Length: 464
Image 1 (cartoon, one colour):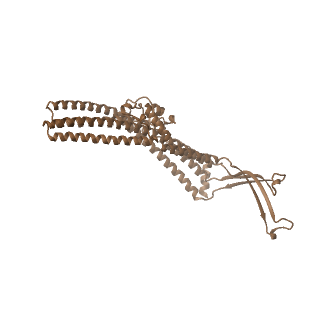
Image 2: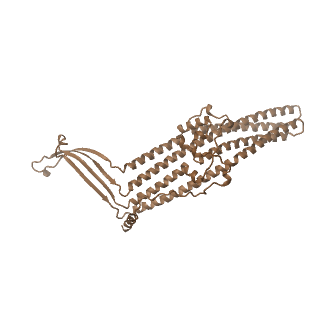
Image 3: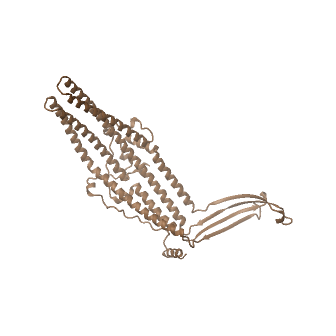
């Protein structure tokens, strides 16, 4: 009891509200990105770009719109928002009195020995009452704190839905361009197989004319078989990527909306990272974590209020009569007024709940800071990839050009008898590998823009 009264006395003397004042914690990350990650950054900011503007490809836009309508994960996130909104409505309604009307009728017969002479053994009573029951007067802010906690939970759920939408947009775009890259790989494998078939046919003719050995013929056949195996693998990968895209879209995507290859996809725009303190706080996951932290502050307010008296009112106004016809007659009116006050004297659960609320705030703070640190690394990693991928593509393109020239020269030298058969096979393998690498890097280049848009918390709100 002494501990409870001391706590209440301190709070009253301090004159402060039950809920601690919330101040946004300082981000536990550097104030700027590493210099080598931001050189030459473009001028557009992710949060200012709605996804239809960032993804200018019309076919991709249509696929994303389909996913936003049909995707089950996004639908589940939206239903969670509706649930949180309803829970907030319930908690908000606790502040208002609940007006109720009730009516009843009873008929009772008493034992003869308990009935006074001249009184009937059977009595009838009808009554109608209008009033409020156990309306808590929120003098110390308990209900307001619980309402604020429910509001923050609702807002956090809304940010989680926004994060799910942004993740769906980014994943749909990434899968779309991955399918385009797989189709490029399929075309490359088909072209390579045709080349190897023609080359194998030429070697067979030379073998029949005893111009080459059986070893050369078998090597040419092996090269053809390897190209055919690559073709089968790319067919499988195209099928898998298309299945993944259909799952994200929630329905089969029409062939007319699918990309023929990476060259047919209009690439997304460029982005700038901005300052960490500005960029990271716009991410849905960071905003959700902050709402959870604010809700934890409100939880402390509710826990503190539990140390103070709770005052509730029950009041009714009605009418009662032994006959239905006299229910609203003169003298049949009734009323009651029942105030109730309860003061905690000793309850270990109250102190335990307060300690739980304090620990909950510390947990929410740690989760908030961890979310910011994780987001900082996400952006830094995306910037690192974006800052080097163009140079990698240029270098790989140079390798492809050189490999194509080497194939031409080795074939010429082979027909002139100046180059061995193994040199031709090696040049062809190198060219195929270089072209595969170029497709992979071109995909990585587009994917890096998509990832940067997502980790910067791109303007998904504008697309809602």
